[in-house]
Length: 307
Length: 256
Image 1 (cartoon, rainbow over the protein chains, first blue to last red):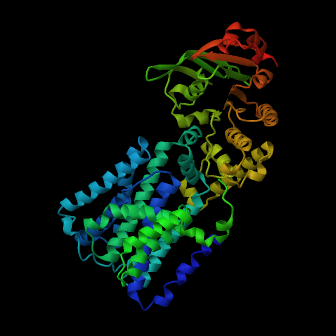
Image 2 (cartoon, each protein chain N blue to C red):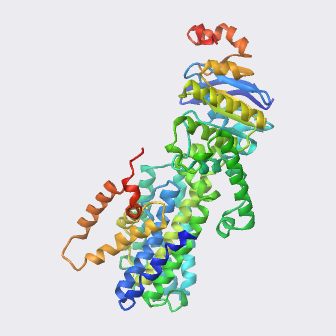
Image 3 (tube, chains in turn purple, brown):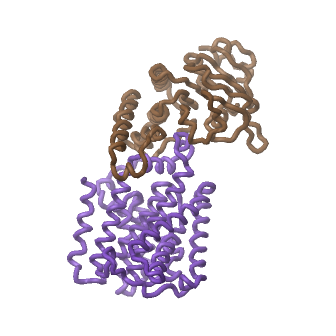
């Protein structure tokens, strides 16, 4: 039960800011990116695969949801679920090359996929071309009302559910099978782990989580266009995992807060955000190789390194 | 006879690593596979466990191992260890042993998510067998430590434990004694013999340490340049001239 208590601060955090909808909407964005970054975490830290094309799943989720809501007047909850399902299917298809290539080659394949999806979206009429889709209505449905505070708690609940699922499978068959595949494919296979099944499952679930995040994003922002889902977003998702603390939902949350929140925090000043982000990224990798989460385990920092 | 290999060949782009190799392993025997470096011993094992593609047949209790998908091999009761340790190095000893039983676990993803009764009972059964094996191998106090933090000898024990916990009928050990000192070797030998007796396992072992090979084996198969050059009991192998020649005529190898 102790692990669930870590969520209490996140329940309380927005309350002092209840009168500042703009701040709250940033919290909502952080939460949405957290969901997408958890998708990246499952793929990389859990399953040992690499993808720098996850922005495409984000785009698939966002566009599926937006088109369904705007053009076909589908209730948001249904559009939300369909966009996750659609991303899942595409994720499984994208996972197929992972059965043959790994490492840098897989990185390049997924990158190509990400860029291709971005271009394809720009071509079609139904996606609004390069102008994107405007005025995506904020759903009046109970699940995602206009109030940022309401949205925040919905997003937090989704993260919490994902956290429960992940912590339950982490020392069970599915979780350990993924970890085994990550550490040694040869040994995993000779102990009965079907690499085909688990690689596709990893890509599928990563894509589904990212797609769901994309759907929430489209509704929260109200405007999407291909340029929002570029290579930078894919790399940011990867960096969020590394910066925060790979393999932990808390860590990923911190990473998302760092990448989404910091630009807003510094937007009032005349500083180039990329320089700061880059510098901090290097410092973190040098001094906190396990991510920002390490700060909270101060004891570890003073331990002698055993390698 | 539990395993019968017939006309096994493995080719790597023109290089013939194993050529027309045949061998029978008797049930509950301790069978050693020896030979100079590069003779193709590990390749035979890799072919049997479908790590490398091969031709021929290898019947194990009615199943042709060479026709099975790699992840099914463990289900018929063949487990192995690896020459250069293939542990799941970021995981704890407990998790490593857990993965040794993963092929027997029946619950599915939804059982895990909803903590169903079948999940709980299987999970506690698995944990029990992990503790049992760990106690037997004397690694219980390492259960919660990451394997990469353990000394080499202990890591070897974990790898053997991971194979044994799958309850194999045939256990294939690839150079289990390499890199261990005399004391550690003696201890590991005791453990292996004890496990073998306890679970009535058949063992196929690749090993270079002749003292150990001669003392534990019922039967020895000798390979050189991808072919079988001799087979027989330890005393027959010691007398065999072809074997002595394969090892550069160094007869002192066999004095023990």
